[in-house]
Length: 81
Length: 244
Image 1 (cartoon, each protein chain N blue to C red):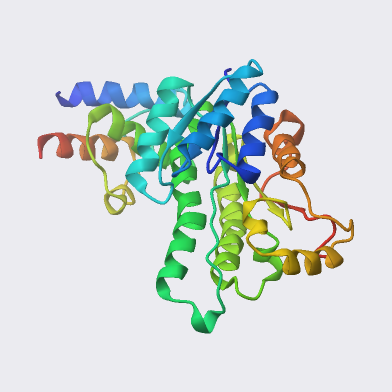
Image 2: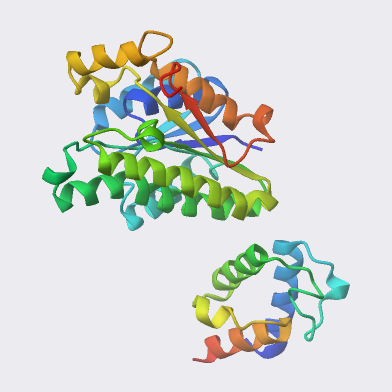
């Protein structure tokens, strides 16, 4: 899976699982401020990422996620690990 | 949406009454049990005979793997759980000075760790569905304390704190989390107390009698229903006026 695939899957999950507006989702958008995702929403996203990409994301790594692009980076890193 | 309820410790006592009540209210019911397979099958048979749907599922609710396997099974056989009733509980009484660490650990594991494990497992589906009901059975012992029950009372007070915290965490997803705190209810658990204790307790109860499991189940049925949509984080005491 290359980066473009991860990005498009990430967008799809944000729309489907968190009900976000697709037009607002950019790689530089921040979860908390730009997308108004609350802490439980971030947990929901993590669960969806783990289920869909088959990766494990420990809480300490998840805590530092601020933007959508960083989440893509993290999934990419996990898939290549 | 299909209505699926999972009741832990549902082979007898209050759990059994809750399973029968929710089945009568139209839920497909997962009847969890730890060791009383025959009793659990009787509950299932009674539900099916009345035209309802139920399956018996064995799991030690204090064991994470068994809890996850139970949720996988119920999800496959009945669908995603929309109402979880954390009812499974044990007592292992003794004055604190004589209570060993095993007695403490076993009661806390079965009565409190189970609530954490089962609620966590149920919430995944409920958050996705943006709705659901978690109802845990606490006890007046957890509110007022009871000599000889430091372990049990601590576990049941723990359920109340857990209920409040979880209610705050998942309220934004339309999920309510509540507890019921029964007083003296006529079950095997209170039978074990002996006539003398029961007799003495009855004098403390405003209504002058023990409660029935069905009288607890009706409150659980209400909390599970749409009627209770604006109640969360609460502990409803069902004790006939004992703890006044």
